[in-house]
Image (tube, rainbow, N blue to C red; front, side, top):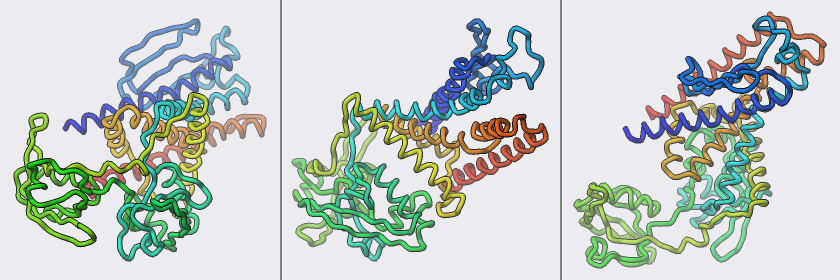
Length: 450
């Protein structure tokens, strides 16, 4: 219940912030280009709070449904205009000014992403070097010769510094021709090149949560190798030693130290079989899990500490104020292009439409990122802001991109499109959005039902 409430609140905050940024772009550029703004609203429906400001007596509102917002300009198509406001209506301003106003919303979303990434790079982003974890037998990764601990230093000709850039480039290569060329580096610094070839299986691997499973390897995480034993702890009493790598607990696979903590914490006081490797050989021992009380909750305790030798894989990406700007702009540009390519490939069928997320899935991401801290939530906001900017630029009549198409046609032919054409366009746009939302809700429900 608590997680659901956190997700809901984080989702409302995220949507409210990003919509406010988007609509503020329309609002401020509209004012700069001489348009009269009648209302600026965060949320839809009945206004809950309204205040009037400025010489134009603009209404600023917070409305009942916090899932959107809008800016209402004076428009001669909606009714007569007072003589003192002649020339200030949206449809009376020059077409380039109208197009600029329509572009401003998405552009402010991209600008927000740059600002968010700037803060992240300035603060420093704890980064896990993209590296190979456990490799499944007879998998694409195994056939390509990937080994545990290999660092991924490049995908094709593109150097990779973190998992985000690595995944973007793996996806790009995957959907292009089903071949992912990698440059790998061992602990000793030796580099080699290899290619993961999935052939015609690429589209299946673009489905949510299928990439690593389909390729056949896990992202590297600190393995469950014992670096220290707690005196009189459960592990020490059972004969486990420093250097042992735990592989299963009570039949549950343990791929990394995080898995070990998760499996042990819910088995307080129980006797379980612990499988481990020592000097290349496998052993099994029975262990009675210890107990500890944390915040009033009893959790299992094995009495071990994991390896601290992760410096080669973990580092802090941090830049100065000026360099952070270029890094933030580059990250925003890369993410924008990737979003556009993925949308195009969904249309052509090269990427699964199961990747379309609805509000339920987005809310889950919002809640998870909010619980991890400000940096994670900022990164989430940046990605969603980029998606919002890209989607609004699509040439769908009810979106900014569609309205830009209308204005461009009017500029080319010297007169507005016929009312019938605009109505048909609006109907098409609404139908397209309903279909998109239906796919998104279906995917959300399918994820919930497994």
